[in-house]
Length: 289
View: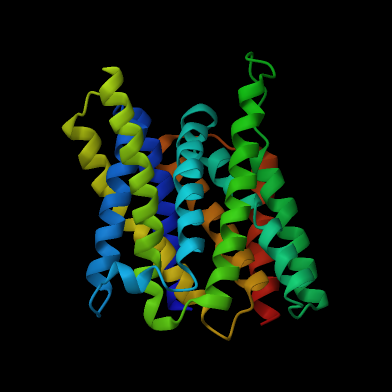
């Protein structure tokens, strides 16, 4: 349980830092690349065995980590854009609503246990997430970007969670969790560095110290959000559908409350109903363990 709680806290901190990016006019791409370099370094330090690329590349999870690295940098950029354009709670909701994807995978493909309390909790969780997304009407009207970025975050986050669960379950030993996590971040960093090189030759690259500092601040919680989530997935007490429901809804709650307390985001009565249902869903799913 402690690993799950630590992952929730680290993931919630990511959304708060993203919100600060807009306040301090941080270059998202530069900060995210720095973040992945820091997260990769943290994983390498945490790994208690010699690191040899030739041995790592022979691991069954190597290409899976490569795929996740690509998805990470794409979805992370989408999350940052969504946070800035749609608000902290919308970004959190779009990401956490994606819990439906790994839940369906766990129940249908992995044949995980289901019961009335669990199914009811999952259903309430999805309703809660939807209600928390509803925002007061503005004069901006409907625009493509209002829906496209949250939708892409939803799909991308769901694929990441599902892939992470599958690769961890089938290929990653407990002793390899640190280096597996580091490898994911390392691949994401490599992709980002190539983008910066491209910008350099185009003459559009301007690196600022504040972007690097922001990336360092983001990298530490980012690494631990994945590290502790993978450890939680290794706990036989939880099946993946239960864990992802509790994890995602709890992150939604913490992120939404943080948006209210620190960024003065306003919630409608339906948003509060959603928060209440989110708490109920966590209790129901927890009771089904």
